Structures are given as structure tokens and as C-alpha cells.
Image (cartoon, rainbow, N blue to C red; front, side, top):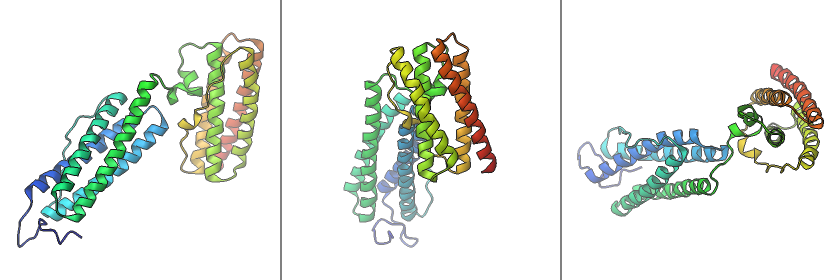
Length: 298
């Protein structure tokens, strides 16, 4: 593929462009380091959307690493040994800042290689990589600006049943909000499963029941003058790989849901709120049993 370039390794004529070799080693180590740091950054991402986008960026970096390594082997006849050239940040915000800066610098570096080399294949490889890196920089800058504009965004651990179970104190508005958020999450989760696995009676029936739960909760928001939260539940939904995983996800969700309502019912509640929470708690017990049966069959 690369045999026509003047700088390529040849056993009978070992002419090698040393600057290109050094540039390739720098690019390879940079991609290798980026993969490591972006994997850590993905683990720190506050939302599934951001995590998934960073995982897509990692796929690009792996492709660049493979391409540059192949060119290096063709040039030198040897396998490259990538080195870690940077320390990964310990917080999400610091990681976004350093990643944005690194991507911008990498774009300039790759375009310099494009300008210097006379090999069309290398030009195309680094030009495409530069385009990818610029796109990565745009994403990191977008996530960083979102953080600056929204000092605190809900994470999965603060949303719905997880949020309620993690809360140290609970007011009535908080309980109503957590309960409705969890119903939103159940709707999004089961809708995603039905879209990906087709009609499954258990999930379809329980999704319909969750709609009834939302209709039970909404009048309480009006009665106690609690603002209805925005439905951001889709941010926290991950599609299961198999139908068995889907049932397991349902089991875990209902266990958390039951725990949430048991925590609520241990509080001093108005009678109407207590009645609704009791009804929803009991429904979750039934849903848990249905999911456990499905899991056993799957």
C-alpha cells in the first residue's frame, strides 16, 4: 500500500526520513495517551449522553493509533512502542479543559505533517485524523460550556429512586419529584426495550401501569404547589444487550423503586400522599415479581 514512497523502509536501502519517524512516534504516543485519559474521562462523565460521546471519540483515537502504527511499521520495519506522554486529570472539568487543549494542539501538529510530507497516503491519513481531532475539540468545548452555564446538573445518582435513596433528608416536594422522575425513567427504560426487542408483554403491561402512576402523582404536584420536573430521563437510559439483561434491569429498577417508597412511607406524610405512595409501592412489588418470572424464563 505504501511501497511507492521515497522514505519507506527497504531492506536493501535503509533510507528513512528520521523526522517523519519521530513525528509518527509522537502521534502514536499521543493517541495512546488520549485513549487512556478519555477512558477515565468517560468514567467521570455526569450523563450517559456525554459518556457515550466520549466513547465514540475513543473509537476514533483507536483507529488513528492503528493507522499511524501501520505507517510506522511500513516506514521502519519495526513495531512502535507507544509511551504515555501525559497524566490524566482527576476531575471531569479538568479533563475537559486538558482534552480540548490537547485536541487543538494535535490538529495543528497533524496539519504540519500534512504540509511537510510528499506521500499522498500519509497526507490523507493525517488530514482525516486532523478533521476528527477538530470535531473532538468541538465536543469537549460543548461539554465544558454546558458545565459553565449549568453549575450543577443532575447525575444518575441524583435522579429518581437512586436520588431518593442517596438523599440524607427528604422534604415533601423532593419526595414527589423523585417519585415522578422515577416514573419518567421507567417509561423511558421500557420504551427503549420495546423499541429494541419488539413487543414483550411484561414490559408493555408495566409501561402502561407506569403511565397510570404518573396520572396518580400529577394531582399532588398541583395540590402542594410543587413544580413538575423536566423529563430528562432519556439521558440515563442504556439499552440492554439481551432480553435477559432487560429483565435484570427491570428487577434492579423495581428493587430501587420499592426501597424509595419504603423510605418515603417511613416519613410523616399527608394522608393523600401516603395513600398514593402506598399504592405505588405495592404496584412495584407486583412488577418485581413479574420481572423475576421473566428473568427465570429468559
